[in-house]
Image (cartoon, rainbow, N blue to C red; front, side, top):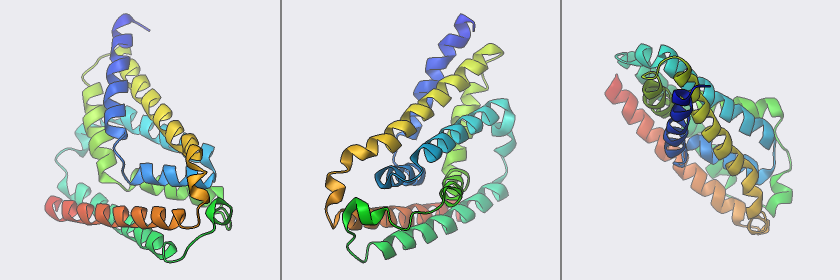
Amino acid sequence: MSSFALSALPHGFAMSLVLIVAIGAQNAFVLRQGLRREHVTAVVVFCALGDALLVALGVLGMAQLLQGRPGLAAAMAFAGAAFLAAYGLRSLWRARRVQGGLVEAGRGAASRRAVLAQAAAFTLLNPHVYLDTVLFVGGTGAQYAGPARAGFVAGAALASALWFSALGFGARLLAPWFERPRAWQWVDGAIGCAMLLLAWLLLRHGLSAG
């Protein structure tokens, strides 16, 4: 890889990391799976690869394709709002009762396919993912040429992999606190409220885009 491509790598890494660290729907989902210790590796790999793919698509021209299409942006916003609202209400429903720590939280675990389907929804039904990952990060990487583009995408992919790994596998460090009976009640309540807020913001975004 050329020196120019190597210089593009930290650029892609920094841009991706700054945007991905902000707690959003996808991050909250990865954190919850990490706390439950449920299909963590599959979720981390899926989210990291998904981000890398979206950055690559943005670099290859998807950013230009999405620009100037308000109807598509509105449809994505409405779909994302519906999904987040449903997930948020489900979290608030779980928060109604006290759970018995990590042991009870792990009962009735969902299948890997079901968990990955949720991860896909959080990744693909979120217009902010396209605005940040495809349009902003991918659009910036598209300004590089030749091998430098590969360096930029590699840097962004590395940032995603490190962040999701830290979020998913590092969540177990909080395990002692989550042995408390009411801990999951607080988490589900907070996630539920956050998801409903994000759903409302996406709905407003869709109405303005349409």
